[in-house]
Image (cartoon, rainbow, N blue to C red; front, side, top):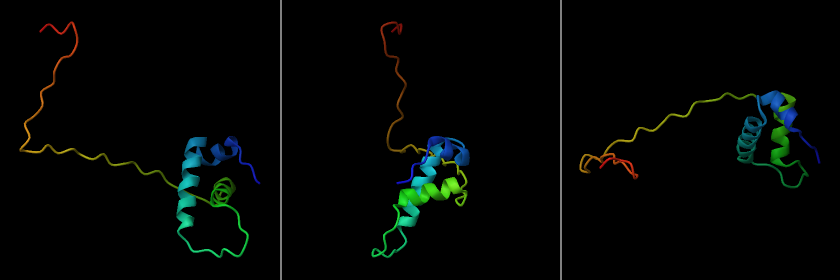
Length: 89
């Protein structure tokens, strides 16, 4: 069993959390491909971490788009209320 240290992953990905996310996404991606079960092969997460730490895997960050909530025209608008003891009401 091969062990990947957080320092190895962080060197290629910027930080260890991003490295683990990239490796997990890549493992899910290669899981979609058909493979021969008769051969003994490495686990998908091991293969993806090897690719990441070896420099074979490149990625780019894409910003998430925020969904705009649209108000239902039939529903009345909600007013903000003050809650608490010292609200002066």
